[in-house]
Length: 114
Image (cartoon, rainbow, N blue to C red; front, side):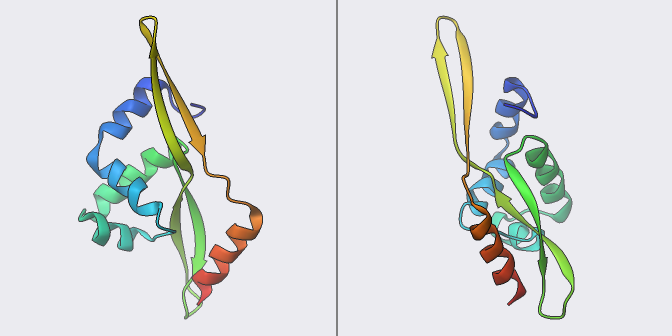
């Protein structure tokens, strides 16, 4: 894990709201408002979890534009898989990152405009 240590990552994934956010974001980019509704959490809870998830490089922030031309943030999952391996009295965590190419990111941005 680049941004946080293994223990911090496990503690983050222990949190039910953090897991719910990642799970929802696997369906596509979402705003904080959409995440709050889907995960049944308050705005402050969502923002705190998103901050920790971004620090761990498990989600990323993207800019979107609404039909009126206003900019807002949408979040995407950047993780596909987390594996914990136990061997010889130790453990290791492997994180598989999403492989979204620039064309897909452009498509997501364009869809955010409509």
